[in-house]
Image (cartoon, rainbow, N blue to C red; front, side, top):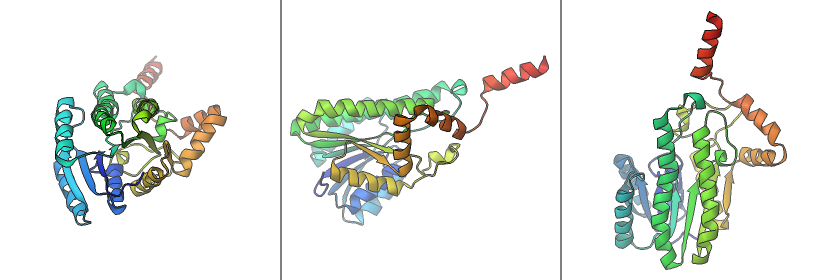
Length: 271
């Protein structure tokens, strides 16, 4: 895909990977950027930075988990600013805990934002792209969308779902000349991951590295974009030696007992 002269909409644009992607697209010469996130102030600050590069910017402070709000905003944006050629679904959240200790509100947030939010906005934009017989959709998954990891059960589930969603849409939307791609970064140094317990031996990459990999993938029309040598190594190991990889992940995972384990241990000691 050539992005010059195009309009792109990016969710999760105010920070982390989303913000880096916005800056990369601006440097690559895209014509217009529609920036979606919940934080109006951060969006406004980013928009000021991008406009200095001569790029047209529109901020859309939205909660993509609210279908009515998103529907109205997308319809208005398409009417006011014209065709959206590129949709990048980057909004997401991760909670880390033992599965036995997982809190239902955290589970609900991950599923609602990572999966349902992505589904909602993609459906609205894809229908309009189909009428124009043109478009590219990038769904940001994760290496955990290929290889699940202990302490990240729900996050991994949503990212696996996004990979499946992307594969299904790729076939369905191809007759409308809409390309659908998945971006799969490994651990990336963002505000979100700084609150997580890291897996031993995993080296984090920068959001800028992920953004540049996306730009290269767009140029090549790659259906899946694995980012970083660790991602490629892990995927190949999962194909050839899945049992070995599972043991490596168990050894590398943060070591924290669940409340259930601690309760059993206390009960055993007290007997």
